[in-house]
Structure formats: structure tokens, C-alpha cells
Image 1: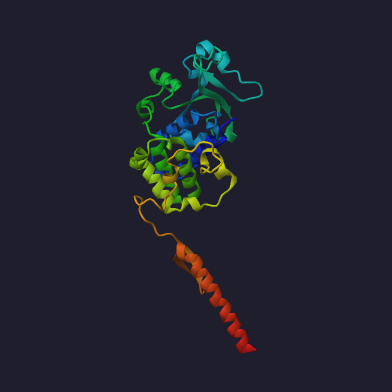
Image 2: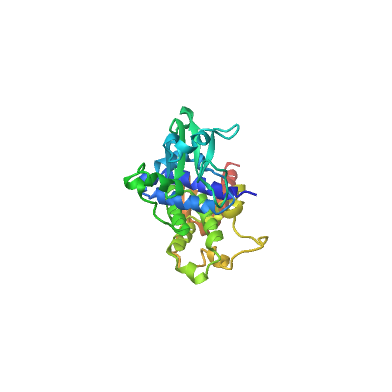
Length: 299
């Protein structure tokens, strides 16, 4: 069974970061490299084209005319031939040979785009910055300057912190909730003291506390694979779960005031979330009392 949950959180994260990347001066090239490296560790599909325009803008993905492939003179017929019924094909280490996971893996993709896709029109070979085919283009002198520099190495925890920081600014509590869970399932089996000392883990948990991520209403996507919170039905859950998700009980996290608007005589009043329920009941009783009083006066 494919890990469509991993594919989804990577796609949603790229789409979300693209909206704030320029304003926040994010190194999206490095972030996307780490995200797709994370995705590649699992049984996932090639999903780059879901967000290809964003990947090209960030210079994580490159599109170069297929005839410039270093092996085009030798393997042009193969590179120009699509899979049956498709408009593209994977590019292997040696394009003239058949795929082999160890000896001849996929290193890129050839795709023929038209105007409707918003991509370079024509037949292009697509490949990731830092990958094997990227290195061949760099060595051939077809990529230079910043494009010839490999992406900065980032840990998944650092990437999650960047995504959560941007999501919090946008008010996207769901994405914060997703990464609180996804990062736990990825590194939660590490030594507890190591996790407590990781500044990126701390930042993700602190943001989740500030936006009250654990109270985000549930829906199917949030209970899906890496985005699901651990439950009693899980056969294996890291021992760190009790600490990881106890955001309010962790004294090392900053205290926060959670407030929500309550209407008072038609005007919104920001009230501490813990008192909001009690205040709402009191206001309802007062309103009911006023109604009874008016009826008695008019009666």
C-alpha cells in the first residue's frame, strides 16, 4: 500500500510555503529538497508535477530541453519515446537500459508540456537539485553559479519548524497539527532527553501549543497515517508520546493565553478560553432573565 499520507503532507507543505516564501526569505530550495528526501524514504509515487511550478520557482527542480541530456546522442530514441498512453517517462541512470533499483535507478523524468500546464512548452527533462542527473548537468557545464551549488542540508525537524512557523503566521492550525504528528512519528523513538533538547522539536511543540493545535476539529485527512495522533489501537507507539503531546503540562514551553470572542451586548469580547464556556452560560441565563422580566412588565 502506497504512503499517500506522506505524499499529501509534502504537497500541502510546498503549496503553503510558496505563498509566503518571498516575504519570509525562506530557503525553499533546501526545504523542498529535505521534504522530497523524506518522501523518498517511503513507498510513494512521483508527485512532483502536483506542485511543479513552485518547485521550478524555488530552483529545486530543473527543466532542460531533452536534447541537452548528456546521453541524448546515444539514447535519444528512448528519451523521445513515452510510455504507452502517457506524455512522459522516467529517466534512468543509463537511459538506454531497463530500470534496475540498484544498478539503473530513476534519476529524472521526461515530460512534454503544452501551454495549458504553465510549464516550459515542449519536451523537457526534469530533475532535482542535488540529485544524480543534476550533478551530470553541472559537470557538463549546463548549470552554473548558484544553480551548480547543492541545496543546504536540513533535518526534517528543522524543516517542520520552518513550515510550522509559516503556518502559524497564516493561521493554518491544521498544518501545524499535521506536522506535530508527522514529526513525532518520524523521530519520536529517539532518546527522550535528546528530543527535549532539540530546539526545532521545541519550536514545533511551542507553536502547536500557541495555536491549540490539539483542539483542531478532526476530519479524515487528520487521522491519516503520519498525520494521525497516536491512539490505543496503535500497535507501536514511541514512549515519548506522553511527553510530546502533553503541551499544557510541559513547564518548559512558554505559557500562552488562549482567547476566543464572546458576544456581549452585540460586541465581541475576547475571553480566556478556559472561562469562555462559563461566561457563555452566565450570559445566556442573564438573557433569559431579561426576557422573563420584559414579559412580566408587558403582561
